Length: 134
Picture 1 (tube, rainbow, N blue to C red):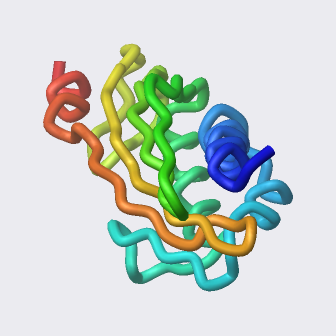
Picture 2 (picture 1 turned 135 degrees about the horizontal axis):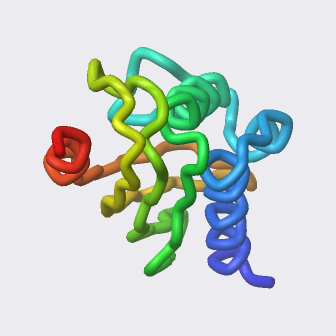
């Protein structure tokens, strides 16, 4: 497997361990200690990912992500994904409504030394909030 394919495989596995299921020990191996999510610069390393994953799973316990497109070049991997789940816990001040949601997300991931080093995410929050407000 060449480096580009290895980077893509790492990101696929990461979506499985952080979003489709919550496997903290796997996240620890995938995410570098100096990892930065540019949308959440106040947290770093694997703990940043685990805090976000726990928060999302508390609000959407059946959360899944389908990777629609996965493109890689050099040390960057780009993902277009669809997130789906049922709103069963508070999320951004919105009490649970028990309704299924679906939204799109795009992300760029930088890989180095076989681990995830950085991420930039664009989440369709307006669509999500409209769905949560009924």
